[in-house]
Length: 84
Image (cartoon, rainbow, N blue to C red; front, side, top):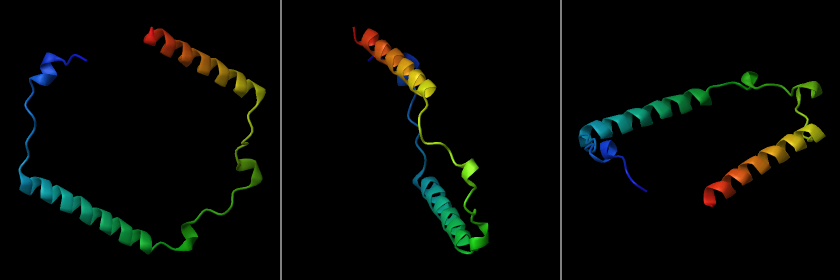
């Protein structure tokens, strides 16, 4: 695999350790604050069971099976053509 000359000529970005540590601890502190806020949520924010009409039908129709077969054949053909 050949690399692009412009990408290989770019020097790596080096950040000072203190900056990386402050970003890490800042992000960790933010996550702890969000976790604390989630702990104060009441059960009232939970969604009740949706009605049966809102649930998705898990079964596949004949039309869906045909579309899936066409997509499978298309990508299989593309992989075979690429490998040759």
